[in-house]
Image (cartoon, rainbow, N blue to C red; front, side):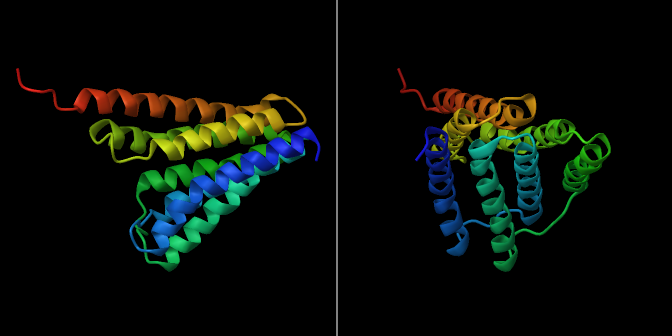
Length: 197
């Protein structure tokens, strides 16, 4: 197996390892994800995958495609399990922003603008998670975000064509995950009870 394909296979494996416990929790009824949020994340990730393919990302694009497909599956699974289907104005804003990337791509014949918009939408999606974990730093899995950081870095190494279009999404999401992990670690230490003197 060529080097780039091997890296891609490792990144796909990390994607599956990261998602498996979450999917199991949905099936067991322990987690009730917000359906519309997962629709947005699945759509943005899958469109980035298509843009990477168009810009000859090759094997390095495959983990992003697998991630987008699994994310869409989670949205369908969440819907079938009657998870949270409430839709806010902010949800619609993210969805419309994600969908606006397609006309940009179509009219400019350049997938870069689609990737820029979709990366921005995905980063904005970190906002509620940052707010939640700042107050409750044990409410998120550091392992989950660590696996996604590793997956994105390996996917970058597996890319067959390095351009802003192919690099932007996995690089920015890696940085966002690292910043979130750092903030969670800091907040966990800051909120630990200190022994009485």
